[in-house]
Image (cartoon, rainbow, N blue to C red; front, top):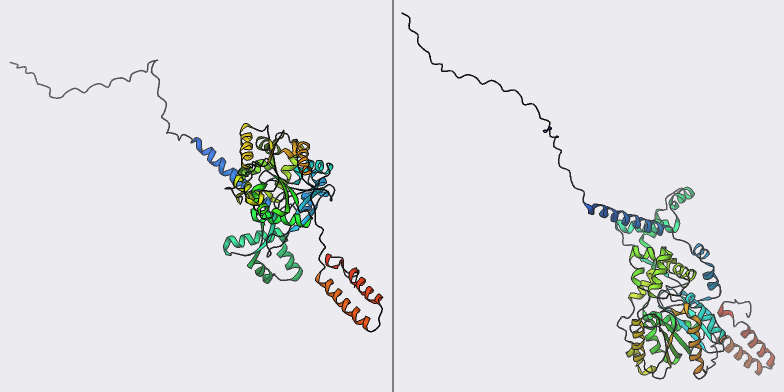
Length: 479
């Protein structure tokens, strides 16, 4: 008998591998992911651009200072109008401090010397060249007029050379090397080695202890007053009619109060109550703005027409720009502007006791702007005794209204009583006076012993013939 039994299978069947699904037409393989990228900073370009421009400007200024233009080359590069103006003038030496060397001031002159004498003092940033038309017009009207360039302006000296102790250190030695290259050239020491066979250590060491420094002439109001007084004295103008333009009043106001006897009258041309000039000096101080204004004719013309005058021609504007740029005069102008008395009060100045008898005239632009016309009324109220006259020019009327302004000045000057000048005998130099005394003593002694009077006269004549010697004509004329 067969017994059939069912045996339970304890093992589970293995699942069959499922076939890979076929990709459908709608599903596509995803591209591989890219690493995240840095987003560029928009300020990086301007940062590096600013740094690059600053470095280029620094090296341009540094290398240009290593090879400054010599005065002769600078003068020959001037426009014809400037060279003609310079040829008509002359220089006067002035000295503001007894322990400093004198410097030269350029003057322009026109008219009959026996007539009424007028001296024009310009504002900062200007020169006698800007007043050349007024000078010609006043001279044609029979007035003896003189205009001079303030130190640091125009053709006057703009810098002075001083000797200072070298501070030493790395930067001190670096400045010494640069100054040596400027003065003697790059291969001076090598030339000395070739010529003498040795290195000039002693000379280099002695020169390294002291250095020559060229500094701009930055005069304050007191020093500018001394310059004005010396120009008047040297040219024999006192008593003189003062014509003060723009910021000139703030520079010479104290001198006027201290020398009232030398002043015949005062004419103010567009001088504000605070004596602030029309030319914005900040444009000559900020480095990049300064290079733009002095280097680009259009930028300079735009600045002048916006702040000073709208009637100046292109050639005259360019000549003005060249004078500002030449021989680094902007540093002197900016330095003088900082030394001005910014608390100056024209009402207080005009009310001083010493000025009560001094005739005054105020010439003012009536077409520049509403604000400037209101400033003119404030000046007129501060100087109630002054004659107030308007003109058709700008704040620099010497260019676009020269004949009109010259007419007002000439009419005002000639309307006053004629100036009476005292003729003073020129003092005899001490050396000549000593010879005259000796001649007088010898003549008296000869008279006692029977010598004739002719010998005495001969001796006096011989002494007088040598009189020009103190003025540099030598000894051959007298003794």
